[in-house]
Image (cartoon, rainbow, N blue to C red; front, side, top):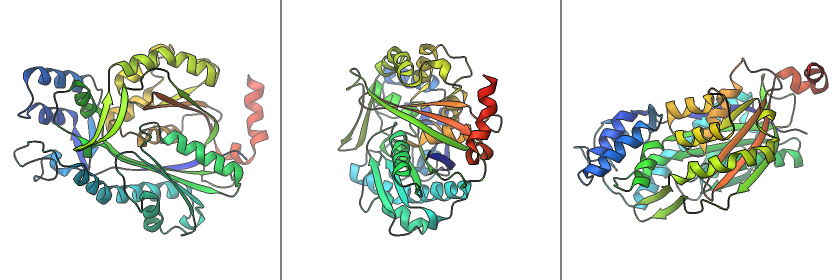
Length: 380
């Protein structure tokens, strides 16, 4: 039985920030010198991000709060204070995304058999998985797993886990839900790596429903194919995510896009059989330079990564939730034909590259695969 994504749901905090506004906040901090201001200006200008969302209303100019004083000065709250805010703000976003995904997939909450939650920006127990069961009114006997602290690539292992659950339990209905509140860990810094992190990361939640039942769902679906993981022998210290005394600390050096650019062709040749075996791409936008390196490394057309670039432009890098936003855009694009081959890729600490084959299927193809696929085979 082939697992498929039946529907997606997304949720965003209400505070929407223009990238220029965030740049001005960061550059105006009293501990930022002239050199750091130049780096901030360059990093934000190169980000290809126009707007981002945050759970920190004070960043949007409202009253002072956990991170910002009334005059706009960034504070340095403890890791506990930041994590307490995660405990407060993450569950409602996760539930909103999960509820939307179930509605999109036309699945009743009582039908969910497994829950997989994902996050790397906060920690607590009972965790997001247990609270999601409570908030959505799911059966208390559903099997739960939480993938924590894997980073930006974590949605892919969640989808892989869901596909394997469906293969082992054909009547399973798996709800995947990712929530990342990256802005909770923002800080004022003259460190170029911290500046780059502050220029790209944002908040958001996304969910997906996975099932192998061809009769489920409303219309189109994304059929899940083979998954692959590659751990690079480079970049172990170039992309890191550690717990510090004043929040989680992201290391994201300029070497990361270069490593990806050097290795992406070999990975794509090995996993997908080359770029020509893929019709459309869903690539996690860790930043504009990563997308640029993937595009040049695979000799792709300028519009090949349009879905990834649009999500980056409108929402920033929401860590693990971002790839689900991109896949949602692909699935909901009615111009994509049945049988379109999707190459999905995401990058995480390690440096780890997670990849997956996916295929767009309409309702007729899902319920009558032999008849629906024959014309496509004959046309080749």
